[in-house]
Structures are given as structure tokens and as C-alpha cells.
Image (cartoon, rainbow, N blue to C red):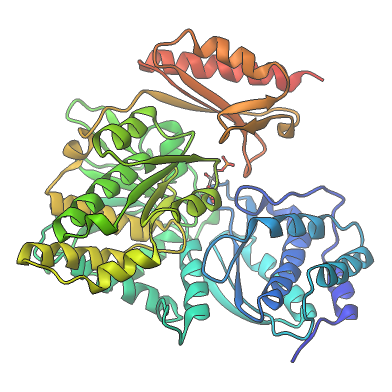
Length: 544
Ligand code: G16
């Protein structure tokens, strides 16, 4: 069994020296300009090996991506054995390793962590990894491999994948041969699983019109095209999916004037979009873990159906299926959101769907965790990142329930198909896209009907660059600023002046900026409030 080689570890570290910067594991791992990342990726590789050894050789995933960030950025995040994000307590070890000042200090820290965490150095270490389409990706893979070799970890390179595909694979490897087997450990296995589930979920249903999918010029483009091969064609009753912005040959185009983050932040379609009024459009982000929908209305107004809308659509449909299949009693549904959720969506879930809502801080890790408290936990960030989790008890009830009528049988079959279609490990734009398509087909809805379920409060997101974003410390699920002192009082004063006003500011964990969100009764007021709160942030950010 391979073990860590101290000489190799130090030599490998010397090849990828710490650039004298302070790094921090953020909302979704480490993320920054790619030219600063080599030492970070090397050290994350060491941590992946430690984590796998700690878990007796269960496979850990490493994804190299900066998702929605600009092309010159990159990042790295770790995936735990069941395909979920790295356990929170280990984020601190990642940060410690990334900041070890010298190669020798890194070796000492590695040994200290091994001993403090009671890790058996002779236990096997297994790591699988993948990357998105960024130009810096293959160089960073080299840094990762150097670390895995030094740490004596078995490793497999799955090359280009979407982030959720890697999460899927990690869970498949670790559940192989157990009663919880999740799927075949291959990219093809992912397509086959989703394709078959989609076919079942669409039984006797017909989708109407096409959906045009903007792939942010990222890895989602080629992967969606591959997935299409496993889906029924339009003639066979499938969905007509048109793929645009799928240029991965020029990595400098990634997320530029396209993609889910562009659409959500700018509240407009990518300039390249040529769809007609009422046509369904969707945008993925750079690593295909987010999706948002939109269309242009008859009156030529841009309408966004973001993560909140996908959550409400899914929660309402799952509630219907629960009732129709006779399983409602066993399937307590709940919705998890963040402070970015539109106030109207929260009210719709609580008052119309009569379901509980939990609000967590930003970051899928927080939402995912909260969603496990329900039999069916629907979690989505407004930016389009989310999924639906079925508890083991819910899965059992759905798999074993004896339907009492053909109607119950039909609902149950759809429910069973959805448990396979929806990625249980993390938000997955490809799987979420098909989920929305299934629901719209079942409800026989177009974009207008979906939009008309409730009226969004006008809202605005602003990105504010400050000297040191770490000055801004948010509490209460990021709805209030604890620091800098006095800032929240200023925000409260402003919010009080607007009808249905709500606003908050928080430091981004993926970009060097503070984000400001505001909503109010009218578009003008929401914009005004956002602008004024952004000024408060600028003012406090400039002080001291
Ligand atoms: C990541 C996280 C998301 C988060 C987003 C923005 O998304 O996975 O949970 O909402 O960053 O985070 P922040 O506001 O802290 O910058 P992605 O798609 O970029 O990986």
C-alpha cells in the first residue's frame, strides 16, 4: 500500500511554491486568478488524500473549476464520499495547508494534521478528479497529480466534466456493490441513468415547443450535446433542445455575455439570443451546476424564472404527486432558500403551497444540509443552484408503495422516475433542466403559466468592490451585517423608507466583492434602494 513520501512531498511543493498570499476556502472552495492557484491545488491534493485515508479509503473528488467566474479565474473544491460538499470542519484544514509558508512547514503541517486527526497513514487513499474547460485547467491538474503521487494516493482523471457529473461519480464509486448503489461509475452511466429516468417521467406526456439552452461557452455545452444522444428525440415524444453558446474552443469566451450568472445579474438575455416572444430559454453556468429560465413576453419584456421559480415549481409538482399517489402522509416537503430568494416566492411557498421554508446562508453546502431535514427537501438558491433531496425513508416509501388505483399508479411512476432523474448529490443544471421540462409537460404549461403562479417583487443585485471585503461580516443567515459597526443601522434606515423594501449586504465567497441585494414594490424603488445600500457599503468599505 502506498504511503506519503516526505521527500516527494517537499520536492513537489517546491515545484509549486506558496506565492506569499493568504488563501481562504470560500463559498465553493478556493477561487481566484488562475496564476495564483498552483500551490493551492497542490495542497488541496494533499488534503484529499488525508480525507480519504481518514475515511478508510473512501473515494474523494476534486473538481477544478471557477464556475461562474471570468475565464482567467480558476478554483478547486473537494467532494465528500456521498457526493456532497466537503465537511465544513475540514475547510479549516484546507485553509491551513494552503497558507503553510514553506515546503517544510507544509510537510510538518501534513504530519500534524495526520496525527491530530488520528489518520492511519497506511490506509488507502483514493481520489478522482475532473476539470472544466478553462485554459488553466490542465496545468492545475498537473499540480494536483504531483500532490496525489507524493501522498501515495490512487487517482483517476475523469478529464472534462461538469461539476455535478463529478459529484455523481464520487457517489457511484463509494456506493458500488452496496444496497445504496447510485449508478455506473462512468460518464456514460450518468447519461444512461438520467436518460432512462427522463423517458419514464415523460411517459404519455408531450412537451410543447423548443427550449433554447445557453451553455455559457462552458463544459455544459458538450455534455448537454452528449446527453441529448440518450434522450428521446422530439419525434419520439422528447423535448426539442437547442444548444447555443457552446464554444469551448475559445476558453476566453466562457461566461462572457452569456450564462446563468450573466442573465440573473443583468436581468436580460444573452445578446446572442435570437428567440421569439414566449419561447423557452435557459442558461447554464460555466460548470453546469446552475440553471435559470427566461423568456420575452408578448409585450417584449424580459422575464426571468430563476432558482426560486424552479423551487416553487418543483415543490408544487412534488406535492401534487404525493397527494395523487396516496403518499402525502409519508412525504413531508420543505423548501430551503437563502436571503436572495424573492420575498414573493417565500410567501407563495408558505401561503399557497402551505409548506415550511428554511433560510440558510449562501452556499450549497448550507442548503443541502438543511434540506435533509425533510422527506423531500427542495433547495434552490435564486441564482439557479439547487436540487431536490429524497430522504432514505421517502425513497423506501416511493419504491414500495402499493397503488390503489391507476391514477395512483401513474403518479407513483412519475415520482419514482424523478428520484432517478434528480441528482441527489448536488445542484445539477442538466438534471434540473430536464426536471423543469418534465413538470411543464405534465402541467401542460408554457412560460406564461409558470410565470403567472405569483408576481415577483422587483429586485436588484449589485456588486460593490471594496478595499477589504472581509470587513463585512454578516449574521442571521446573512440578512444582517454585524460588522462594520453602524453599517446595518444605515441600511435599516434606508429599507424603512421603501414599500415592501428589503435589502442586505454580504461579502462574496467566490469573488473579491461585496454583494448587495434589494427588493421593493416597484422596479424604480428596488433599483434606488440597491443603489443607496451599495453606497453605504462603499462608504463603510472606504473607512478605516
Ligand atoms: C458558488 C456556490 C453557490 C453560491 C455562488 C455565489 O456558485 O456554489 O452556492 O451561490 O457561488 O457565492 P458568493 O455570493 O459567495 O460569491 P458557483 O456556481 O459559482 O460555484
